[in-house]
Image (cartoon, rainbow, N blue to C red; front, side, top):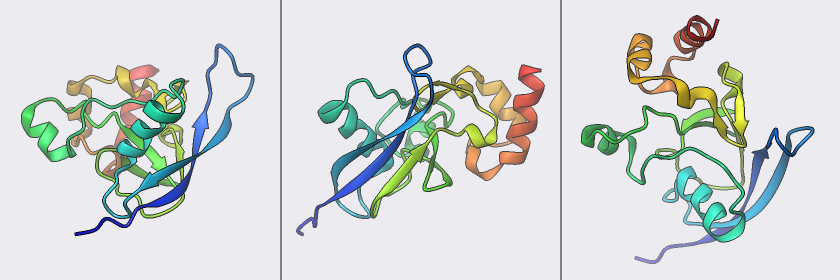
Length: 150
């Protein structure tokens, strides 16, 4: 079976509060296999081949369900927005050009680039939300975040 690779444009939210006055977007050209390459693999390609200053959160290379079963999932902290849609980077497949943003729309604050203060939420706090799959329960997650940080 031949893989039909193509090059896509990946526009990534960038912000380092220690260096940048304002957030900005940087565009990268990344090879993918449409429908097979995940957002996580795209981010790793950018980091490994193009820009080692990019910060993002990933605990593994496994699909969510496998990582969770093995007990190594980071409680869905790899949550980002792709083209305005909340996704887990380890699950979301890429088909064409994308824009990647941190999940600030649901109440997280940017630490650097795509890393947010979601990394501070513990597994017990996630369990209060009733799901580890953040993008399925944003309202409850927003309530939890306000409760934790207020």
